[in-house]
Image 1 (cartoon, rainbow, N blue to C red):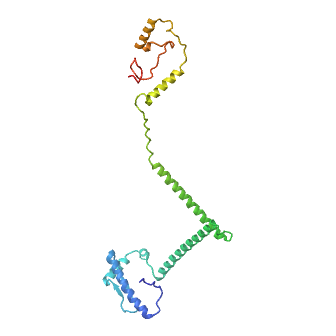
Image 2 (tube, rainbow, N blue to C red):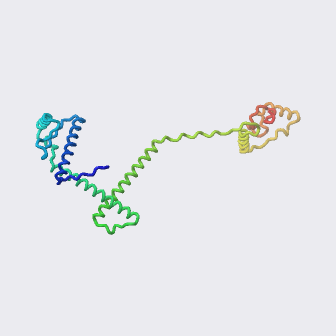
Image 3 (spheres, rainbow, N blue to C red):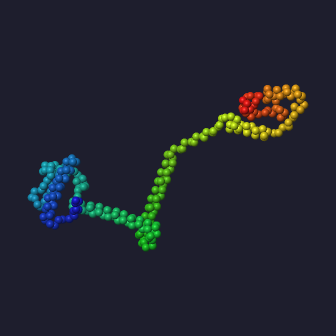
Length: 262
């Protein structure tokens, strides 16, 4: 069960006031003892009351005199620096309460203006009925909201830029291997070479063909054919001076220059 908050006011009932005094005095003595034991400090307590003839002290008369002598040796400014009485204590409480009240009023005003701003944005409210102080507060709230949004946008941009800089570049793509089929007479490499050489021959300048074999006899033709078979690079078949027959395939057989007859 939670304790009810005590009202700080003078208790008018005598019996209730006396009972409260005894209970609070016992608790105060206990707290002073705990403070001195746990923290290792010098402390004392002296309590006068109309219900007892002699004052009650803690821990004892010698201890109280020692603490009071230590206090009197301090400068006067230091003695009264943190000293309070009933009046000063109440004044401090009033000052703190006023500061808390001002803070609460400011927070409530900001919440009220925030609600008005959102109502105007959604079309549920209007600023036509607002007075000049309300308009000033609303304008200040709008300016502060815009600044907060701009600051948030800048922070997100910086975060995105730092992530993009810190990210490592992607690895370079490895070149795709070219598939080359090595085989017989229908291989891709052989067909490519034959097409290239055929184009070269087609683009060569046409030269006049000289039929040197028409004036040869039978023995001369046989000798010429034998010489050409033995060394075809030295015979140009009458295609013009300096022209050599290109080899269509890489075959070293001079008799049957064909893939079908290796």
